[in-house]
Image 1: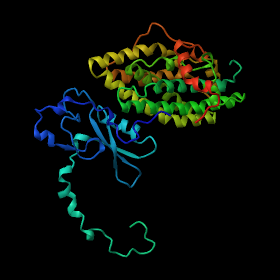
Image 2 (image 1 turned 45 degrees about the horizontal axis):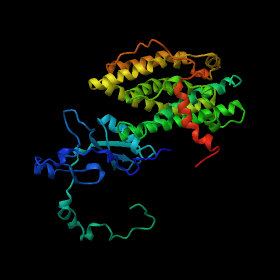
Image 3 (image 1 turned 135 degrees about the horizontal axis):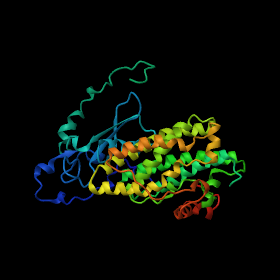
Image 4 (image 1 turned 30 degrees about the vertical axis):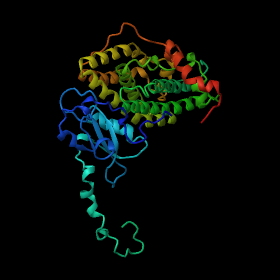
Length: 149
Length: 252
């Protein structure tokens, strides 16, 4: 059995260092752009090669992969991969993420198409929910024998 | 080898094809053009190992001399290997590997589709499981042939060169002999001669769409099914069998 380089759930180990990422000419707007890059949540992607429409890309674009584990569940994000186009991305996703029977359905989405929340906005986005226990349905008596409420 | 029953020899031939090609595909791991392709080619290789294990085990059972799949895989020399020469040809570049994948997986697909109806339940069972695997292998190869053939000038050139490299080995796939013919009259085996037309109609449509030409080789390989091989099989087997021969019975 070969060692499995993909078992950590991401395949971006071969990302090339694009000199453009340190180019002072990049605008602040570029730097502030956030994407769900590499399956790690929101990170700045200025200069990181993702989907480049038009022109021969030196590197394959990045795709985020979603797997439905079985019927009735929703698709969950499992990681990312590189592929030259959508058809190949789906094939690669099948090989990288479902070869041990992990799923019955696959989605691939160009990583650049995902708009993600920014780490800087974490407080205003998520903290207000922290002290509102009444939003959790924990004040009901669950009848005996109801297991999946 | 000549004393081997025809059925054992037939299973061994198909099993050796799968085993040798799986080794070649394994050679791509860590050096394919992208890590995703490492995994794809490795996966295809693992499918082929699964087919090889079933077929070699069955060949050993039918032979009745007590040889296991490991004995057959690791303790035969190259003159006892019965694979077609196509599968032992060194990988070349990615274009050549993909050319062979298209040729061979299309052949396997046509073969296994028919072998599912074999009068021999073991062969029918192996074919029934493998047919889904090789349909995927064929799809993988066809997608790449289209992209490389109808891609840039350089990718087109290398894809065409890959086809030219593999084409002298194509004819041997469809060359039946007495083993194939006698078993196919009993509806146990599939006569490879009958696979050529459906194979070509499938392959030629991919080549046409990929703007590639059918190569016209000036020579053709023969003899793999009788144990006649190219020099490179010996090197492949040396690598594959080294551990088992140095440490008999080793396992992990």
